[in-house]
Length: 166
Image 1 (cartoon, rainbow, N blue to C red):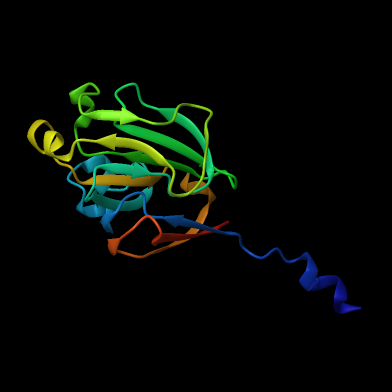
Image 2: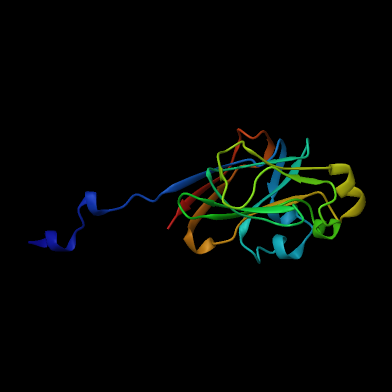
């Protein structure tokens, strides 16, 4: 009789997890260390900061490229689960107007973890922009229940975020 008030275990949906790998070979750290208020205050969403050792930005997940900025300093990927991830190279790099950047993908392309997205000249960014420290941001946080972060020295095989969806 009281079974009416209990949910069957088969009716309870297990929270879905999304594994996000490092977008760089280098170092990942708290996004709060990125010297840009829009990112460090989580105004645009939560995520990680990264610093590349080789000047190449790689796909951290499988998904579809929603946008590559005309200046090639940033890209947005949507995962199969619907998460939207902004990958932004450096701080105030939009002012470089594409100088020192080369995109390997375009809107609509399908990518897998480790696919090359953008190559960039780290030394030129250090000369012409505010910083080469970069953010990777989940822009639709309304889908996210929790995020586990893994910081430190990384390769593109390293898991840097484990996201539990709502």
